[in-house]
Length: 469
Image 1 (cartoon, rainbow, N blue to C red):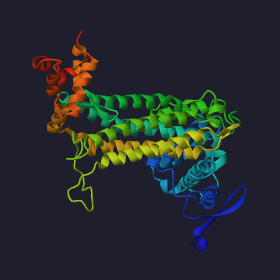
Image 2: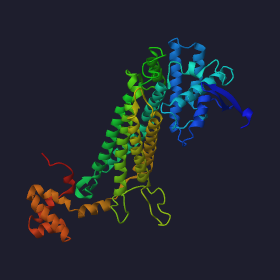
Image 3: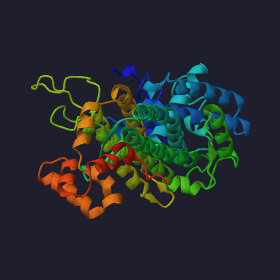
Image 4: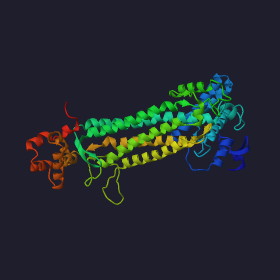
């Protein structure tokens, strides 16, 4: 850029050259120059930018209501913050995740952009800090130490409730519908990867549904923790330089803006120095990933083949699976979902470690915690939606193969236990296996029961329920 394409901005350390066409200021520019680390930005659905806009709007309104800022300044902050919330200023938020651990640069990025946009709206000169100052006005009653964790919680609550839960619930409902459709399908159960007693396909899928229900319940239980906000704690939790009711009023206004039940945390010291609520959320996402991993694996194993594997489930044929083997189709949705789950496991390990690193009055791993939690939410949401739309809705039983496997199963011999005992039943199963006989042939050869008794007692469909009372 030529000299005229820059303006000179100032902060407490001195002058900084800033691109003239940008609304950010000196502190944002310093961050761009000092942290050329990676390309990861807080752009997961632009939720962090929106959260910062929501927070600054509500902080401005609270400061106006509490008499801390004049009405004309509040109006300008609210208008500029509204443009941030709406996504009209997204290009003004260029910072990467890998910055100061308190998120100070991202907080100041928001302060500078909102202040300069407010100055534009007032007809002033960008960078003049008049009539709206980024620190004295936009950041009034705040510190990066309480604003950034507040924005963290806003972003996470919105993404869980508006993106993750609907996406995963759609998959859950699809599977629940499939379970209802396949109640008549009796298949070989498997434990230790070996044949076990019969089970209904509906029962198999009901287990998947229950896993998702339990995981979502865990995520929902984590929401109240991140609905508690650090705002009002300022630098170390004491609330220095903020109105005594500032945090409370900001939380009320955020609730009005978002419809989420945000509250000011009773103990701000914990909210600044530790992020246990974020660790809890991440752990719930890991549990959800565990459930989805199991489901995706079961689907691809049941579908393996189509002729040299189990081949008990049919899944949609979405794309060619090999560049060399013509006609090969792979369980790609299961593969994508399990890779996402592996990433979530890693993200959770990062969040857990980062959450343990609070030192005295501040945890300085906030940005990486937020980044990983939001990435986990976004990936699980996208992957669950894709798995539902491109795989789960098309799952069908291969009834012919399932019946063949059931007919060949040795473990239906378990139905004989109540009639002839474990030892004789085991002898029948092992004789059949070692001599390549059917169970009935082995039972009759050993003389442990009659053909009529075998047919009356060995009924796979009755083996999928407890004994009648």
